[in-house]
Length: 410
Image 1 (cartoon, rainbow, N blue to C red):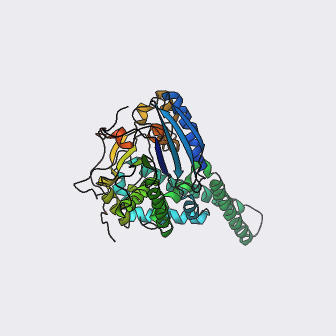
Image 2: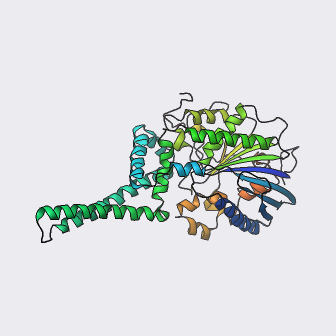
């Protein structure tokens, strides 16, 4: 096992996982870890054992990893904000169409959309997908309603009556079709994605008060772990959870809550969509946190994405492209999970067009694994710094500033 000179293997670790914009119960993440961890252990020849967490409070689980001849005990906490997500999702049809109009106005009117397209078209297309689908659904419903209205004119009734009956029937049909599409959203994810993108747009990139309060709670949880008897505290931010993790750790370090003789502090961002927020006019808080965190020596920050993930800003340095990188920038180390190489051709063919599933591949097993293995990182004997201290960044990473809005103060 290679390591940084003088650093001992990790025997105890705390992992804090921050999910993306997800209203689902966190048990799905435990089951994902259990299932995919077992698959990766079988492929890679090591052992993982999950058990219930003994600590009370936050949702999580315990992992015992026997990897590379070492045993590592890990407590995983899921830092929940799914209740905030659920409360932000207007499930009604009018609320969703209103969110569509508001989101389009913010991204197009501010010019953020065109600049985001200069980074990666995949996540921008993913953002436009619910807009296009909602418009298509409305067109289908309106055409069906209009057809019914015109058909009512053939009834042998007075013209005023047929118009009235036709209008009522057409409106009822339009609503029924739109409601049917909403009920089928577990197939299309249109309503879910629309509310995902509209969450930050409604405040033009600023954090709502409820989210700020939750970030403070997350910060307290990580600070408590840094005062415990562990060798590493690892914060993992996936998708939208990546920019929450940035703010959590920036607040933590600003407040002087990282003990000099404490555990190693590591930050792993996966499938990040930071520019979707940092490119908005009022995201000064996030841009300030990015600028602050990128040159701190209290932590090691690795950012892992993959061009095969159409929902992430793959290989886009979130600090640099946001236009807030100082000359002293150290973090993040940006590299690719290389889906096309770390998945066998057969497995890649199976997953290639399952875009939502690929966005979670970072948390899953690779059957042709290279140097990125989520389960070695979270349950193995090396800190993130030990594992990647000499790994070069991906040469194709994007570091050119593209953001129009670079202010870090209101």
